[in-house]
Structure formats: C-alpha cells, structure tokens
Amino acid sequence: MTSHTPVTDRVLGAVQRAHECDLDTLTNSLSDLSWGQIFLEVDRLSRKGQVLVTRDTGGRYMIRLPEHSREATTHHSRL
Image 1 (cartoon, helix red, strand yellow):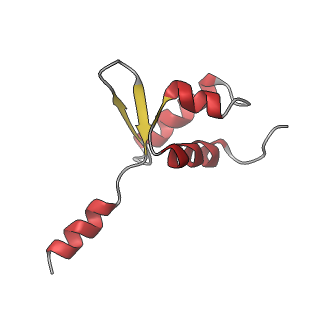
Image 2: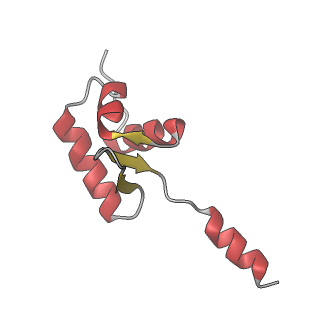
C-alpha cells in the first residue's frame, strides 16, 4: 500500500522517531520510496536547515533534526 503523505513529512517523521539514523536505515524504514527520492529530500531539507547531516567515524551519513533547545537555553541565560 502506497502512502499519500508528502515525502517531506514522511522523511521528517522517520528521523524524528529515530532521533538519529543513517541514510540506509532511513531508506529501509521508507521502503516504498526509492533511495534517490529520500536522498534528494534529505539534501533539500539539509540545505533549508530542517535536518542535520554529519558523517560518523565509520563513514556513514547520519541524519538528525537540529536541536531547538539552544534557543531556550540562550533565552533563559539572559534573564
């Protein structure tokens, strides 16, 4: 069964549920989408600052959501 949820929402949802995952794990969790669809969406989201992509020591690309708590911490430290 194919989902009608936009690719963006599905990628962001999968990354949020995993907290952090590599590209292969993300691709496996969204098995009805192609590797290319997921890669292009992760690239687009990364350029917009909606996900962070880093490389681990094993050379895998790790994907996670940016931390929003920094703003709250900065805000509280000014009080």
